Image 1 (tube, rainbow, N blue to C red):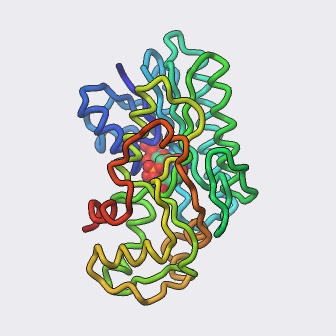
Image 2: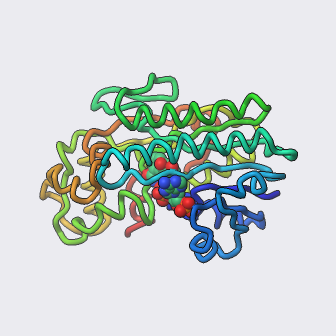
Length: 295
Ligand SMILES: NC(=O)c1ccc[n+]([C@@H]2O[C@H](COP(=O)([O-])OP(=O)(O)OC[C@H]3O[C@@H](n4cnc5c(N)ncnc54)[C@H](OP(=O)(O)O)[C@@H]3O)[C@@H](O)[C@H]2O)c1
């Protein structure tokens, strides 16, 4: 009943591994840095990427989360790493699954809501067309790299993940100004913020692994996206700090690099297919989600 996880040392992956192990399931981890991964995840069976063929063999499922982080300056080299770590990593995984003697029956693959591009007015569901910008292209290539796994009978689930509220990632970067009484509406405040709590994200991955009825593309976001002004106001309330001092875009760029664009432009994304599957969110609304993480 082993599950193979790539990107297992990251924000989402490390919590997924813990959750699977808490159910008594053995977990294999595919990583660039085996000694670090073994230290972070002592109970996992760790494989370096060159041992990929061995790692997929006989697993009950594969969860592919690996990817160069988007936070930071997008130099041409970083852009290449952001794209290739996802497309080439996924291609290698799909190839190894196709060649496995005991083939895992399901691949759960990450993508991102960046797929849709940015808009202050549009409402994006899984049926919406892709955007044009760099991240939209990366997400399309990433999803395209995963599709061929279906040719050998593997069930494919793709999650277009929203901004994960958790103990790391973007939230950890924007918290310090709020804690220092310097928080407030970021950018115009009108842009949408399509978020999901880290526990709901992990529960979605596990649900998709476990249930054969899950297949295709799902938006992994909470059912109630908010505008940035509401996020900042709620964050101020949860931290019991004033949140009236507008944070100009340039400050966000210092904190997040070019990934600030994602938050400064924003998207209203709805998890239509997740809700149609009857998934129960632990954190459907923002205030309890933030309270659970930073309160
Ligand atoms: N967190 C979010 O808000 C969010 C939103 C939308 C989509 N996503 C996507 O969901 C996935 C997981 O997110 P996360 O926040 O958990 O990511 P994360 O914390 O940045 O971790 C990603 C993992 O990918 C591996 N990795 C990093 N750079 C890599 C590279 N150049 N080549 C191959 N592997 C690399 C690392 O594992 P090793 O060092 O062990 O190899 C790392 O632990 C990512 O692909 C991300 O794009 C996340």
